[in-house]
Picture 1 (spheres, rainbow, N blue to C red):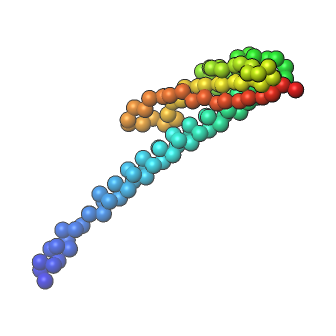
Picture 2 (cartoon, rainbow, N blue to C red; picture 1 turned 30 degrees about the horizontal axis):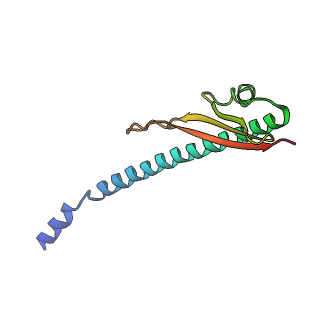
Picture 3 (cartoon, rainbow, N blue to C red; picture 1 turned 90 degrees about the horizontal axis):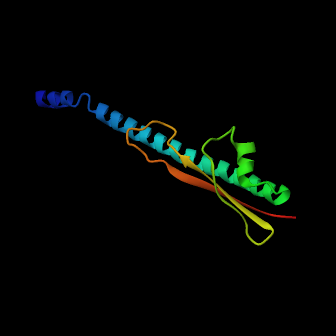
Amino acid sequence: MIKIRRLQGAEAGSIAPLGTGFALISLSVILVFTSVSSIFILQRRLTTMAEFAALSGARYGLSASDFVIQGGAAAMTGLRVSVDQVLDGVTREVAICKNWAPPLPVVVKLEGFEICGYGAAREG
């Protein structure tokens, strides 16, 4: 009976490593989801901006770089127009890109990469 009580007392505190491991895994999942959602939101914003730039180019003849300077410079910095062309005489295609950086500081260095949004509009 004494040996059983000694073994039960030796297990004290064994839940702490489990809780610490669970906390680290939860924090990692939160950081990953935050980064992925940041990429998704940036890509959607760039696509919306490229579509509006293509529409203004098809309708009013405004270049995509002028559209970005007039409409997008206040909201986002570091935008680059990678494609601004008229394909078949009536379809305007625009691609706007931006370098992505992680929204939260992380222990492992993540390299930023370029994300682009595409839009097309037909004249008429």
